[in-house]
Image (cartoon, rainbow, N blue to C red; front, side, top):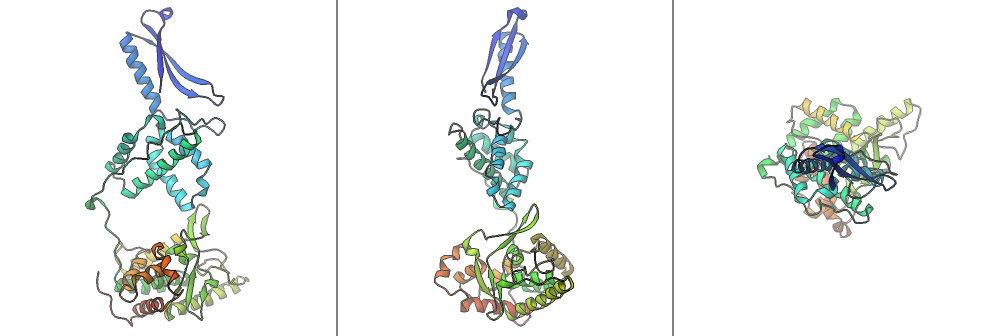
Length: 398
């Protein structure tokens, strides 16, 4: 931020006019802040330096599109505001909500007020380490860097490459093993069985969702996105080609993030029976509501006819309720059932087929060389079915 000073003898002895450059307005005209100061020349120089620093760190008013200028006065908040108006819509609702929270809690009132031009990699890294010192976790700091980096990259483009990106070469703080949270553990078989027994007191739709996730290891969003047309009774398979996410308006279905998530997996006879019972219950509900259960309707739906998917958070709450009723450790959550699946089938199928069944992207090429539902996947489904019905060998404690 530049400034200037000049003597003003017409205003008395030791009078100085201090001017600080504020940028340009919407018409491109230069804007200054002027102040009359009385004192020695040295004192006036110190005061001018203080005013420049104060202006450099002052929160900037976010201008509208007509007034925004991409240049020396652009702050991190300006860049993020521009991104939110031009490109933010391309983010998934979940990512947008996470970025919005990161900006409001950690960026807006701190480094967000600084001008991009006045900040270097050193300052950005100090900001990250200040977050760590304040108890912010590694993932949150990583997301903070992602928000700042993307916003500055866009601001640089919009400024015709006159603005720099001080985030590009920055490094994140190192977290020791002791500073990281405990890794998620796979629940034991007895814990999973206790939770499923406790879920029998829940609504059949909740119980069915928990059974499907325990039996297949699919993600909760994938389970909520299942439609009746995805169930092949003759082949005893489920096709996974959508995912439900939390959106501002509620639950919304979308295509999976990667191609590896699109897959067809086998289910055991017990899980198939649970789904058939749910179909009967949903058909009765639709009949009472005088609507038809749609073949394209969602399997896990609180609406007659299956017109809307169950919200993923609702399924998580149902799991927490069953877990608490079962007296199982509170460290387990719905996603833990995915860890259970990965651990339980490790002994009966190959690593490549396990990755394919769970929809990991590293298995995408493997499916070019394996059948859509191979013998190994069928063996995995039957193995899990025996475990969940108490007919299999106990799973060793982890």
